[in-house]
Length: 453
Ligand code: NAI
Ligand code: MG
Image 1 (cartoon, rainbow, N blue to C red):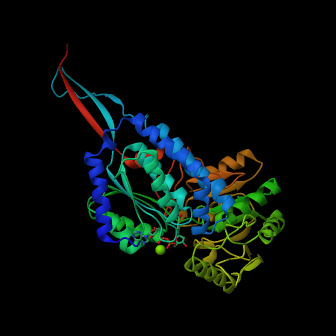
Image 2 (cartoon, protein in one colour):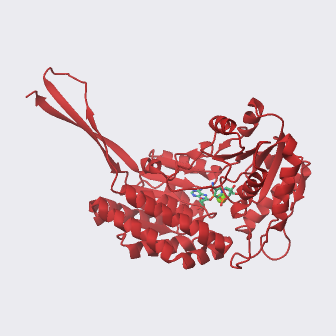
């Protein structure tokens, strides 16, 4: 169903009712915790159903959906179940003494912000829903979520799972529909207290505008063009495999994809040849075929978009060590691609491609110049460093403007580890206890204790 404004109004009204007068806000934290935990258990119980839906809808290999998307989605609910009982303020000793002899005591309460609107993309449909919904439930908020138009199925199944787990009516409301006709009215809705968005930086800016009417709180998880740096002292097997996974995982349709590779001159040829070898061997095919290692792009639009970048790269002088073309024929397949003879100014190096396309560039020394080039992006979501030198690893990690830095690994996610971006990669963080801040208001309660005893 393509929901529009009247459906948005109905969903927000249901959420408002549930928040203002429903059982959810009156429920004790340990009851909420048990429900959230059960959602995690049920996700694991329905692994096969969820993995199939994800693979059919998005095109990703079913083994990946099973082993990564579903497992990580369950994890965040189990992790957040623990936080529901650990949300606390603090007691403050005040220094004021307006009236001699009068003492004050103050404390802070952490209260759920209210009705949250969440809008998510299609690249990890279930996981993005889970990352966003679990902290909402732990904080005691209620939510209206708009699923991506390309991939609504696992989110709808998740809503069913939530009902089975005992989430009361009105607490989680799912909308299917398009961005402009469903997402935009949701982001601007006067009865929504907070908007959390994951998607393109372009739409992130529209969300901020929509929310600015009544100054709703906003968090954003947006695009990236993440640098991956390989030093000449790296364990090359680890670095080559890590760099390949960094760009080819999820067909490169990942906001944190390690898409700008910087390799120290001496080992450049060996490293890029190694990554290209891996790229050439990746088996493309339909997601449900168990032997498939990489599926198709999610849609014709994304296929055209990535194809356009490949053309642009070629026109600006880049050469492909592997791939370099869309696969013609059945399906939206793009060959895993490693581009060399690229420079920092090219469109393929500056813009987010969101496909299995790596741009590789050599560097001479580990110095200011390398750090400057790695940070030369309007994004700052993630970065990778491969080295066996612990000093350099930490020094470089500290200098990179990125929300996550992986050392000798890439694309490692954990429910406890905050994820989000510097610069135009977003506002705020997902996961960890940090994400709870997005959904809680702090109230200071100041009590006069009267004159001293
Ligand atoms: P998008 O940002 O348009 O879509 C993401 C979500 O926002 C979808 O649910 C969509 O319906 C919704 N949306 C679109 N326009 C909206 C509006 N005006 N108001 C409210 N909601 C709106 O991303 P799209 O078009 O699917 O992909 C375009 C590019 O964005 C990709 O090639 C990629 O570079 C980037 N992207 C980044 C993602 C990330 O994880 N950071 C995820 C998806 C896309
Ligand atoms: Mg769009």
